Image 1 (cartoon, helix red, strand yellow):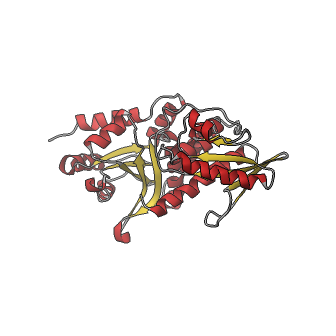
Image 2: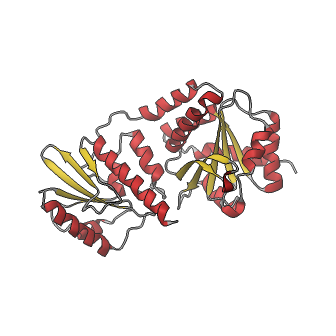
Image 3: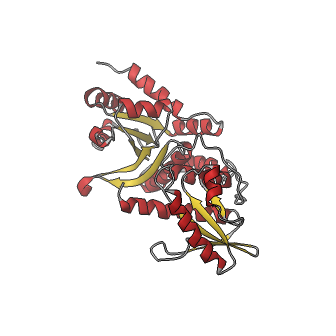
Length: 335
């Protein structure tokens, strides 16, 4: 991954951490990432001032402890000047003994991803943003208590409001951007632990055409559906297309989407979400793309999204629904 993309992710992660503190009732002030400042965020609550330094890694692993140790020493020096409390945040996972090693004195707070997961519990929107942003799965990570806790009591309300909004969107060109935006937010919630990156309106080479969204399957994801896609369809990236058409999707839209798929780019699977379902020719086109070129296109509608949302709310795995769709497609595939 290029340095520019890692920098963009680091800035995005800093924004998420800032929002976590704001939702927990802190007044925050962020500093320009591109300027040399002693720490990233200053958070105030009551009489206390918290000086927050953030370190981002694009995987679950940590950087060498010696680098963290030096950064914490500088952070302590900076906070002592304003009688602040040093807070060191990493995007990966630290073992308890590693935290103890880094905690150079009693008032130093060390937060890793397990603490951030605790901080956003009960806040669906923040949880969704945090987990969807991470490039790895957090299924095996147990949230660990820390001093930061979201004050939000709107558990479940965020995603539910998006579903209602999706139902009310009028089909047609006028609301296509709104439809795309709401679909993206719902999918990020439904598949927050499975997919990451979420590039929206990504342009193809030479800007000849564009697809609506491109995601990457998170590393170490062991769920059956995503494993099959990676292993047997040679894909790591999923293309999403959102069709807010007044009429049913035709074979033309299927063949347009097929042009975005390249096995050599680890991008051979697409999922289309239509406002008003699909005609028979589009279904035949999907089978033809799979049979002749090995490209998988899964067709979904609003009812499918609502069913997967319900599964998510009931702590079931929404990817099982997609697995059932894939089973039907493969079983019905003619020679």
